[in-house]
Image (tube, rainbow, N blue to C red; front, side, top):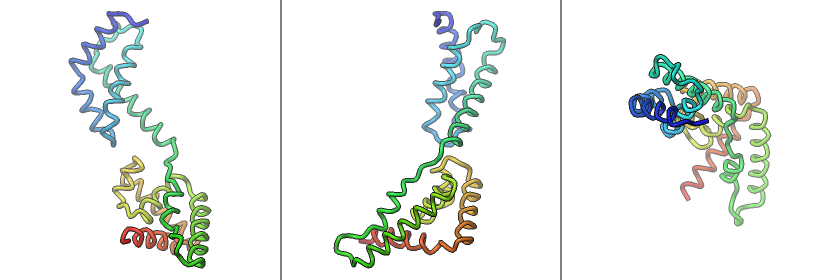
Length: 186
């Protein structure tokens, strides 16, 4: 049950340490939009504490709770698969109605091969590959998009490149990128 005493305790902590908490979170989070949400989660957890008067050092307790919230947030992000819509990539290969039927058939085959290839890769590796090779993202942009460190994005791309070399499929991605850049020029 939420008592007035509990509310005033959390309000006092929010006033005294709120800006430090937001700085603490912003330094540790990749996405600045998550700071407000996670700060709110920290204060909600403080509201759920039964015996708040037993907390000897409210500042240390606050930042301990914040560290746990950050850790759980990071775990949720890594456990949820990154989704890259293959239809978006495939639409870049689709030609207009006036195109040659042989070109349409070739592009349809490429889309099918690309979908089959990507389904064999782990979701984050496939997403990194599509973002980098088809959409033209830099390694840093891939990392930001996937919410991982730059080194992790490089590892994903290296894994995808090795997979491509093993199966000689890099030319399909070149065609996808060329089709996307030709579409942009038109």
